Length: 407
Image (cartoon, rainbow, N blue to C red; front, side):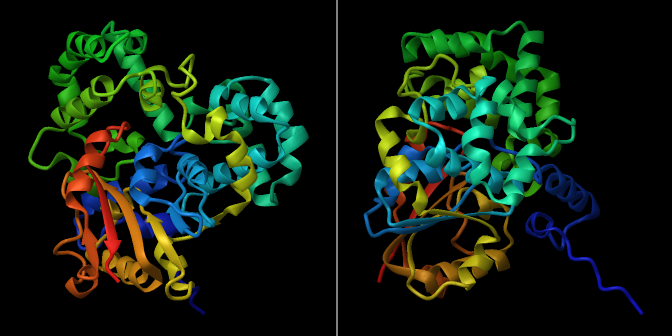
């Protein structure tokens, strides 16, 4: 009797492109394998921009791709009725559940801040054992108390610096190592006292690196950006007809120069691999002391699910949600997947619903790819989207896009 065919991992099904060449499929499989572990200890979408665009209300019922969980917890500041966070990455699901349990059960703000802002102290392990672990489900607890591919206990990341771990943490670490080889002090920007000084440091120290032959060759390889969470399909959209080194130079210039480091925690992560000694306001909203009471009292409104977004939406009744956060997931999708997603978004959307997403390239990717009859039910806020893109402090993405249901 023939054995049933083994079904591919959900991430593999989402990432591997059909109808493409063998070389591209091999790259897609390699990315899917790399993406199964922890990728983002910190999410790289600006939650202040998100909340401004979404206009969260007390009756808002939200759904969002979880990623590192930072933004989902930060949305609680907007006081929504409920948030469902979905993700195919088991590490991100475990991180989201850890953050929720920690907000509920750690003694207070000081311990919560030490755990997720400092994230590098021995006391965090005792706090986990005494206050958090007893309240985790078995799967989540097994994940954190298990070992990664280097045989380190995963919970140990909160003793030695969780933001130095994961795919992105490793990528930033390699960038810091390369900077040392070129005798560049990346943290100099964080000591600057003005954006003018930040720009001077960037032009003097960082910009010339992107003209190096090795850097230009390396960044032209799709696999070199796996650490940024960029799959091969998104790599092509990001590069367009330009050298990737030039694209990355412009994105890094925006991060380093366009926003004061006094409140841009993305710059602190990029240039110090931690929140370091950043000002109190240079933290994600969920980690700021002013928001602690709101986050703690509302965190029970978040439900984290290990699920595919489209498949989860199919299980919901019509007109049951009104805020959708897709991150950059659509950059990975085929036309058929995009159409399936937007049919379900439209079916489940309440009147006035808002959808926010990001793209590697500047334009919205929906026109010409999503069925016209579906897309016609949505208004694209082009001018607002352009402004959100300009003000997004993470500076990674080419476009931030807002759509609103017309009915």
